[in-house]
Image 1: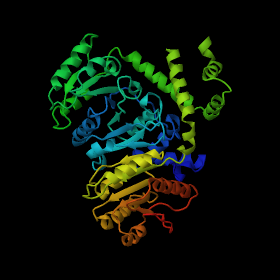
Image 2 (image 1 turned 180 degrees about the vertical axis):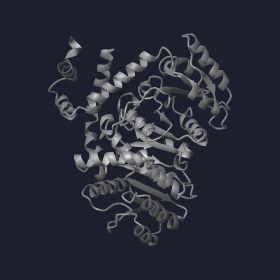
Image 3 (image 1 turned 90 degrees about the vertical axis):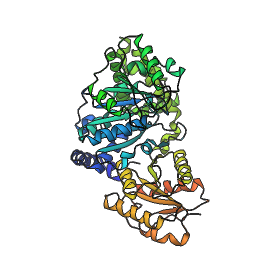
Length: 308
Length: 177
C-alpha cells in the first residue's frame, strides 16, 4: 500500500522525495526503502528524482536462468565475496505476481543469508506485477537509484521464466546466465534466446556429476555461432569457483554483436514505460475495454509516424 | 522492429484489460513480511498464511526459519513492509514478539502493523497487545479472517487511524480462534 506519508499531496510529496533522496544517499536504509516503494508504485521517475540513466560500466548485473539452477544461492555467495572485500552490493530479486490474484510470494531472500545481517548488503524483493518481459519497468530506475546511494554493484535476479527472458538486457549492462548440470538435452534446446546474449555463463552445482559435461556442451553449442562468452564452473554449495565468477564479472566487456539486441530491448522497455506512464492511460484502457476502439486503431491514430 | 514493439505493447494492453477486475483492489495491496523468529522449526502455518495472503492479492515476503528479532526488523525495514506477521509454536512468543515490537519502534518503523499466530494461549495475549501487536490468530483460524484483518488494517490506515505497532490507540482485532 502507498503509505499516507508518500501519498499526501503533490507538494508534500515532492519535498518528501527530495528529503528521502538526500537521506538515502547518506546511507539511511529506511529512506532508500521508502524511495524504492515510490519507484515501484510509479510515483517518481528519473527526472523527478534527478537521477541520470546509468552508463554501461558493468556495475548493474542481471542474473537469469531456469528455476532451480541456483540463482539466489549463487547471488548469496557473490554477496559475501564482495562484502568481504568491503564492497557494498544491492540486489533486486524479482518474483512473479499471480495473474489471478495479483498477489505475490517473494521468497528469494530465504536463500540469501547476508540479506538480513550484512550491513554492506541491501536486498529488495520486487513482484513482476504482471508486466511484459517478466520484469517490471521500474527495475531500471530502482537499480540506478541503488547505484546513486553508494552500492558498488546492483544484482538483478530475474524470475527465471526461460530462454525468451531477454528483457533483462535493457536494465543490466552485464548479463549472467546460470545453468546447472542434469538438465541434459534442455541445454541443447536453449542455444537461442538469452544464451546468445549472455556475457558470462555460469554452470552452477559444479559439485554434482555432469557439470563439466554441461559446460562443454554449452561451449560447443555457442562456438558454432562464434564469439562464445566465458563459461565457468562454480558451486554455490561449496563456494568453489565463486572468486573466479566475481573476477570475471569485473573483467568482461559487453558481448560483441549483441549491441543491436540490447538496443532493441532498451527501446521496447522505454516504449512500454512511456506508454504506461501517459496521464490518460486508464482512460485509454477503459475506452478499449468498452470497445470504443480497438487497440490497433488507437495505436494507428495516436502514433501517426507509423504510417509515414 | 516497429511491429514487434507494437505487438508487445498490445499484449500488455490486453493483459491489463483482462486483469482489470484486480485493479480495484490493487490500491489495497499490502507488502507483508511473514517471519519465523527463534528456534522454532514449525513453518507449515507460516507458509500456509503466506500463501493465503498472496491469494488475497498481497505481496508477501517470507523470511525463512530461525531468524533473530534483529534480522526480522532489518527485513521489514529494507522491504518497506506495511505489515509483519510473526509465527511461533515453541512457546517463545512471550519474549520474542515484544522484543521485535520494541526494535521496530526503535528503528522508526512504528507505523508497521504487527500480528502473530501459532500456539499462543489466550491468557498470554494481553501483554502482546500491550507491546503494540494488533491481532493474534490461533489454530483453526479461517484464511478469510486473515485477509479480512489485512483489509481492515488498510481501511483504518487509509482513514488515518492508528494501526502501527508504535502508534498507540486501543484497536485490536478480536480473532475467532
